[in-house]
Image (cartoon, rainbow, N blue to C red; front, top):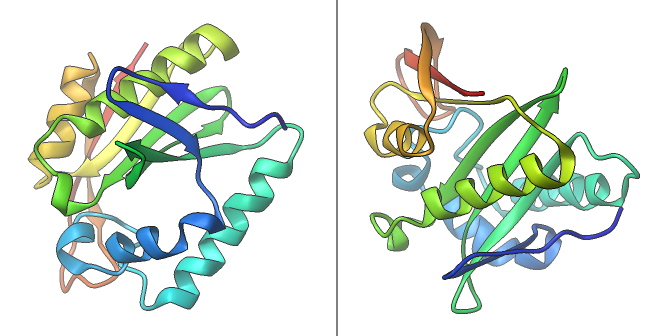
Length: 172
């Protein structure tokens, strides 16, 4: 697969992979940074490395099922944004290192991904999920023009002691 790079006014989105192990591990093992994420926090660097190996392999496929991008700001890796495909629907997700929260990077990266996949892949339907308590994420979804289409229970982060509600948003 040809490696995709996407540029915005402030950011460069490059294929995420093993070369970003240290910086991914910094935010992926941090409880505060991942408290609303279902599959995180990672327990250690080895777990982060295993995830990145899977991402490397996905980028090698002729038709990847998902695309994970490193978000670079001033050539510094500050987070990741991705899109997973199922039945032609693109599910968006993102994570920003807490050192860079509140600067609009998640929105800018997600908007760039939506525009790229609309223009270059013909994707017309996008969804995203977030913990109902994660106001920063659902504000990003709303700013993208997404509409809340569902609420369900049973969402739990790996380190959480109780379930929480999850919102689903859609953009068509």
